[in-house]
Image 1 (cartoon, rainbow, N blue to C red):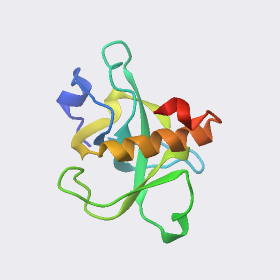
Image 2: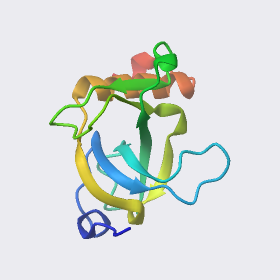
Image 3: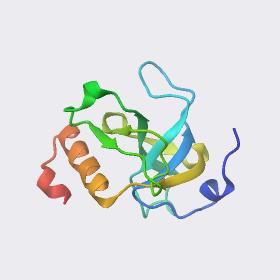
Image 4: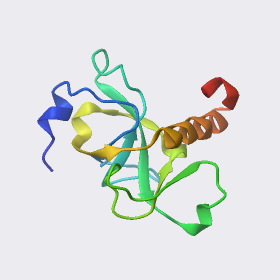
Amino acid sequence: MKISSKASMGKTLRTGDIYWVNLDPAIGDEIQKKRPVVFLNGGHEKHLRLAIVAPITSWNPAWERNPFFVPLEPTAKNGLKKKSVIDCFQVRAISHRRFLERLGVIALDDISRVKKSLALILDLDPEDCE
């Protein structure tokens, strides 16, 4: 897989951007392979060569009421081709070298739902995440 020179050479990444990344190698139940992720720590790319991301995976109706999954409908803005979910439980830091290409961006209300999901996972008061 070819790494996008824009992503690996100091491209300005913004919270909510969706990028294709290479998550291999993975261990155990970690999400793996080439897949889209949502970039979550905008403003830090000049100081860190790591990005905090949450992977996006295919929609499963069993996750309808699970607060750790943020559903996404495909739109021209986000670049997704099918209904998907942001798997907030698998948030992690990855190297900028894993970024392949930009796909799109999620809506502001989706970013808010991701923050609330992360607050639940990390046992933070969601009111502090507004």
